[in-house]
Length: 140
Image (cartoon, rainbow, N blue to C red; front, side, top):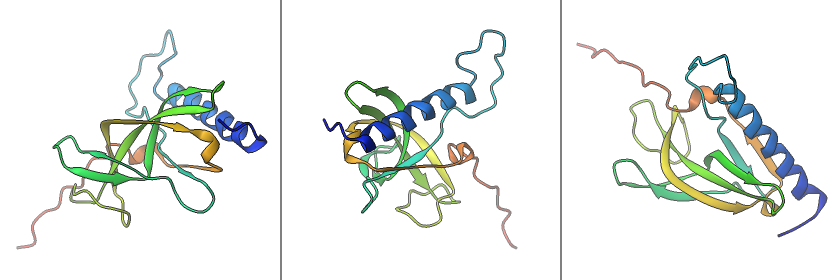
């Protein structure tokens, strides 16, 4: 695995993201046990030329591709991370590729990545994860 300055930067950034994600979910508190509904800071990884994508299966068994991930664990010594795939869906709850992402659904799919392959990290709003779909009244 690579050892240049930028590799360490991505590792440190993701290490901090994991700390903030734990705080957001109140995971490491002794006296506060509120559930505010957020336990994920979704993000996109890029190598500077293109965004990283992975594929998996939805909870319904359908194939999907995604560029949205949740950090599950990080090994800063080896500069690698375990990421779970987040499924992008539109306002109707249908899986989509890219445009008009309304929500990101959690899945059971995980990948282990070598962080030395990436140069940028783009965090997204935790509110996107498992966002409730709008209730649309029929126009009659």
